[in-house]
Length: 85
Image (cartoon, rainbow, N blue to C red; front, side, top):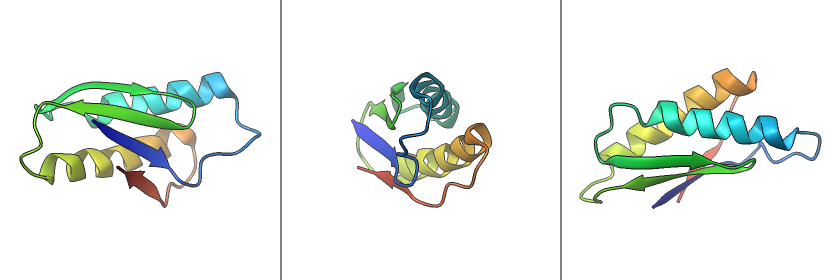
């Protein structure tokens, strides 16, 4: 299980429903084509991805980069710091 957090995105002026949809969509789009990624979900502050196995970090890194790009596209702002844990 991996949690992805937009470190600069937690602001009080953000619509919670819009933020949830943004994180959910970014998580879904960033896991397309990554076979070990079984499930993704988003909340208003972060997303989670369930991986089938943890043999290496290449799949995690791929999802992290794609998530950052997808989140920037959907949020309409630059996303500089995304934390994976």
